[in-house]
Amino acid sequence: MIPLLAEEATSEAMNSLLREDREIVVWWGTWAECTVAISRFVRINTLNENDEATARFMLGLFAIGWTEIASGKLWVEHEGSVLDPQT
Figure 1 (cartoon, rainbow, N blue to C red):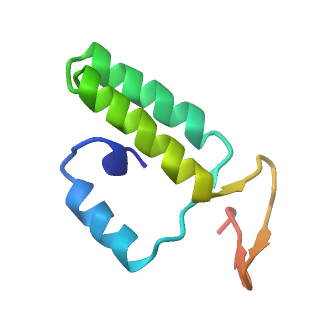
Figure 2 (cartoon, rainbow, N blue to C red; figure 1 turned 120 degrees about the vertical axis):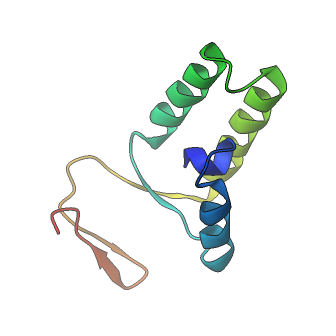
């Protein structure tokens, strides 16, 4: 998610993937992990205040539409596909 929120080496590739497939499936801790990463980028001066605000806003927009996989689930059926984190 971070390359979609802040400019990184892989941002262009991730944006291309997102254009091809708009569905985002994340693990239950993604929101927390992203907010921590954004804060870290601010601390190390990778993001300024405007970039931070934009990244947090974008995270909120993505979170509205993403599918979140709960902790401890061995598999989840999602729109006919079986997701198995053990494979």
